[in-house]
Image (cartoon, rainbow, N blue to C red; front, side, top):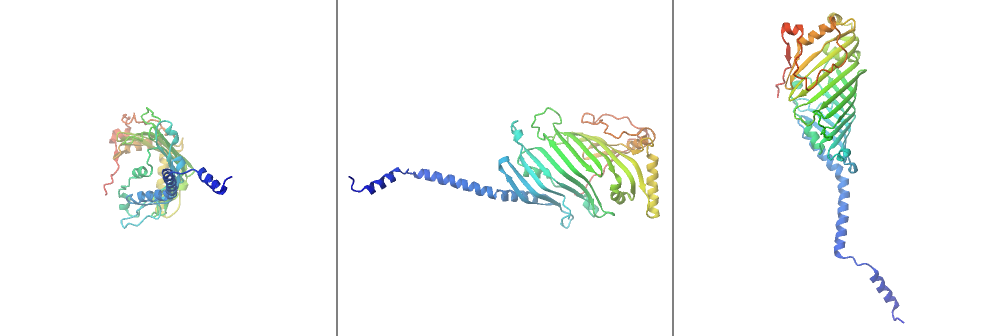
Length: 397
């Protein structure tokens, strides 16, 4: 028999326990500490990114930018910018415009995962409900002052990866003049923009591998634009066609009154355009067509006289068979030195009125391989010369 059975039981229990070495204790401490650091870092990461984004926005010349909040989605390699706003410095006293230059409630920047299967690590950006406002200043020198902000650098700062996919939903673009009489606020709304293959992930052999499609609404009318382009080229290299159809001019009476000093009783506005560019040069045309045009009468004697002149000129230049006023304006040259062919534009007005109505459609005559193709001169061009009018350059600093 054992003299002390209780002591033997205690010794067996102690021997059954595993002895943890100091090395294992240290490793466990390091792993737990690292896990805690990751948790703390994840908690503070949105604040770190928020500070970084707001710092980058504050560095933009002539603008004040701010973001309210940042959400992080690590599993899909993304972060979301909430309530971003950019405000242009309004005047030389340093005050800010009351209307923001840009705002958006949600901007999602993430890794484009499907591109990884093609061997490329690139990003994509989705922008929801953005509003872009071009606000006319009160003084002329504010309108002509050069804008030196580089938003491409901002995008590179906010998106560390090369952007391959860019998408906008429910966007708006406004032109606002608060100092005109009446005040003007015209806009393209319901804008949808989808730009794909910006970094040529598909490794296409096309000269213009990227594509963008834009749709929107314009005062009861529809806006459409298709662009094939090379986003990797330094100089703009693209083929573009666009149209606005069946815009109701009555809804633009504030604009017509402010800048043309007349209003319309009815009018259906359409515009068709094509442009292409390469190696710093470009060429294309703008073809506006107005149907069922009628000037609204009223006001004082001076206003009525001007309305009669507008209405009579429209009636004279209208093609009675097609019931439309139209012209085609050729614009070409270098991006820093564009020219407009005035006599050619007038020739198309007269041709539409008295010879043959211009077709309300895109002509499909412009692409990057036809920029330098010679065009047959019209009678007025032969008589008075090319009539090319250079747009004035902004020489202000």
